[in-house]
Each structure stands twice: as C-alpha cells, then as structure tokens.
Image 1 (cartoon, rainbow over the protein chains, first blue to last red):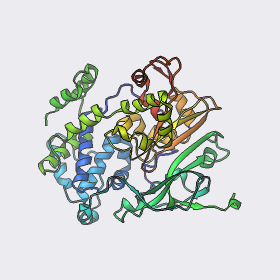
Image 2 (cartoon, chains in turn purple, brown):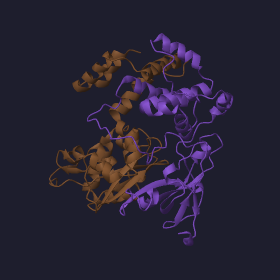
Image 3 (cartoon, one colour):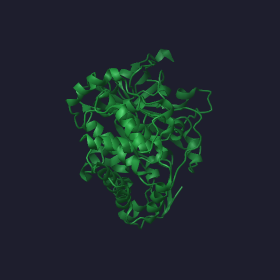
Image 4 (spheres, chains in turn yellow, orange):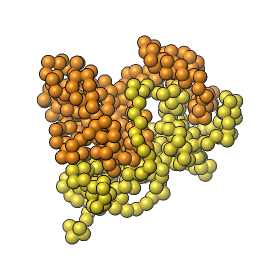
Length: 235
Length: 222
C-alpha cells in the first residue's frame, strides 16, 4: 500500500534528534505496548510478523507520524485485537475514560469490522520459527540487471515506493523466504527467492538530481515477484 | 501492577535513569500511555496477558539484550582474523555459538567499513533492526527524519549527525526491506593495539554498528 509508513526519500522531516543515553523504554507504557504486541500474537490477533507490520501500516496516518513507535504498535495491536473479536473498541474506550482519558483523543487503531471472523478462525496455525523456505534456484544470478515493479498495490508489500520501476543490480542471493505480500493477508506463504539489489543514487533520484552521487548507492532486499529481467537495449 | 515497583525494578543501580522516570511521573500522561494502560488491564482481565509480561519485557530488552552483544562480535573480529572472515562471509553461522537471545537475527549480514567505504543501516518501511546483537533500536532510528533522509542524502545527513565523510568515500545504505538484518563492522580506532578484547568491546558504540558514527580513538567517537 502507498501508506504513510513508506518514508524512504520523503522530504520535510528535518533533523534527526539523537538523545544520548536514552533508556530502552522512555516510559513504562512503551514496555506495556511491547508486551501487548506479543500477547496479541499469542492470542491469535496476528499470525506472523508480516501481518503485524501490515496492521501497523494501516493505522490512522496522522497518528502514524505523531504517536511514536510504540504508539504505532499500540494502534496495530488494538486493530488486530478488535478485528479478531478478542476485545471491543467500546470496552476499551470505557476503560480509557475510567483512567481519566478522553475517548475523543485521536485513536491510532482503525479496525475493519468485516474482517473479524475470518481472522479468528485462521488464528490457530502457529508460525514456523523462521521464514526461510527451500524454493530451489531463482531466476536471477549475481551481476544481473533487473527492473523493479511499477505496480501500486492496496495491501502489504516490501518494495518501497522510492525503488519502484528502477533498474538495479543483483549483488546477493538469500534463498527462499515467505512472501510478505501474500503471508500478511492470510493467502499462504508462497515462498519466493530473495535478493539483495543495489541501486545507484542517480537511478533512484534522477541523474541530474542533487542527490545523485557516483559513489552513493542503496541496497534493498527484494523478492523475486518484484523483479523482472530487462533487455540491455532498454537503456 | 504497580508502576513504582516497576520503575524501581527497571532502574536500580542507575540514579540518572531513576531521575528520568521520576520526571515522567509528574507529567500529564499521554493519550497513548492511558490507552496502553487501559488495554493492558483489559487483556489481563481476559486472561490474554500475564501480570508478569511487562516485567519480562523490561528484564529481557532493557537489561539482557543490547549493543554489548554486537560490540563483543566487533572486538573479536578486530583481534581474530579467522572469526572476522567468518563473520563477513556468513554472520548467521558465525554468531550461532553465542546463542544470543532477543530475536531478529535469523539471517544476519555484517558489512565492513574501510577507509574507502562507509556503510549505514536503515529500515524505511518500518524499523527492522537486529535486536539480538544491538538491542531494541533507539528512537531516532524509528523516527521519520532518519528513515526518510538516509536513503536520499546519506552524506548530508551523516554530516549533520556529526560524521563528515569526504566525498571520495563510497557510501552504501542498507535498507532492511525483508528479514535480512544488517550490522556494521566499524573500523578499529587507532592506538588500541595494547587493549584486550574486553577493553576493545567497551569502545564500540551502538551507533557505530548502525553506521552513523565512526570510532575515532579510545573512549571517543565521532
């Protein structure tokens, strides 16, 4: 999806604020959200990390930017819990009010009621320990030039927008992995070959761009379905 | 669950952190903090969250898992060429003997900084990070500014963050878009020939292993 989470290359966010000696959790509620995220998975609210990432991507977009990392996780976990039918939003809102909160504050979670039953029913399968799968040989070899997909999808994907429809070079082969675009939506693992692809900065941002530097490149780990061969004559 | 108890538990032996947490107690709670508390109590009541779960998270991720694991690998790579070779060719196998807890290193790749080449790590789509070797990521790594800019203008951003790289130094940015996790092997600082592996490990900063800092000399970073 072309969501707010897809931040690579965006302008306007200003300086990186580094804080020396920051504690792992800035406040206790952040650790609570970490525990809630895990408990949500254990209860079947999300079945694999691809699905949890997608729950986070789908939260209210202004909350994505303003609620911080654990606020985003909170939104993702609440969405998953409500969609799985494990809690009800009204229950939670009442409890928020009891604790002195306001139900009109911006809520990051945006559960879609239609998804509720399907999720709960599919929740029994436990994910395997790692997402690596044997898929045999891939289509591409090290040194091959590939062109990334230009397709915009409504669902989960791990091809960032800034690297769509770009030429890159295969620099590493990682074997087969569960395909997030399918796995996040409960359509099965559909394992695919994974490659590291090197992109020149001039390719990503434009040859005449001030961001193009001959010795600067970005490396992305991309699944085979995102890639196609390109005849040398295309460029 | 009692907050005072958790604060104390979390921060014993560290007065600075204690003061930090203390300040939090007098602030107005954010809507997210209240909602997290509400959700926690609801899940405990429904039997979906154990009363110890939050303490376990703090014990594991604020105390047991952290950049000291990565620093150990770096110091060993600096002093043991055979290990360095294994770490760079297959880090997942090379670190198996350590059995680091914390997860997110099913497939680890270590990239080496040299005088001619600098590496930096990011996850533009979420905040993927090698937890078992570096701990949980710092806030800035998860914020939009770093995630948006490091892929587009790494040399400018690194300079802003205090690391000026000459234009003849190649920059490679690793955007962790799948389950592969990346860690940078920083260059060994000068004048450290006499240090033991433990002393060397103490010099290795988390940020040098993300690739936004270089280690200049004993006890100092860029």
